[in-house]
Image (cartoon, rainbow, N blue to C red):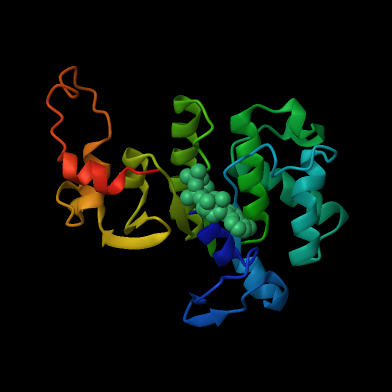
Length: 228
Ligand SMILES: Nc1ncnc2c1ncn2[C@@H]1O[C@H](COP(=O)(O)OP(=O)(O)OP(=O)(O)O)[C@@H](O)[C@H]1O
Ligand SMILES: [Mg+2]
């Protein structure tokens, strides 16, 4: 999944195939894409920690894309940094902090604000909440939905968390061993066709004390798909 996300973002050239965005084929690597194509497609990584330069302040981190994509400097850039912090609901007082002085949820909000700084059309979100406390993760999902409405954004949202997928996605692609095996809508999640999707969906623990007792999984399916 992360490999696919990197190929979409042009960080890793695909071994085969290509990426079509907004009806146009994108270059295989970021280097071969135009500045505008780079701006329109941003990525937020799985690990909030390693995505942020520990030596830079929040202000530096958010200021860079503003200068790079929009040529902003000094006052307008500073004002935009405040706006971005407001958008991701971080206090402006965090401007001069470095990543080590932030919580996991705050770091992921900074990562998201950095993506927003470009004014993208699409943000690839790779497991952006999987390392967070559930309550913090829920707040980030809420924020994502709000920004999606306000800014007319699209996401490629990669997640293991099927309740989050159901809540945020309009279209769902199920991958198995690096390949797409099924495409469904949240409404159709109750009756998937592919046996792997059936296995995947039935394996999610439910808030039901008898869930495990009533779990009936076909041993043949389990053998076929759970070798890793
Ligand atoms: N640059 C690379 N070159 C070669 N192989 C790679 C590269 N990056 C990842 N891989 C391999 O590709 C496979 C898929 O990795 P990937 O990170 O895409 O998985 P993932 O679906 O995101 O997993 P997770 O759910 O743990 O995040 C792994 O076996 C990994 O070792
Ligand atoms: Mg991954």
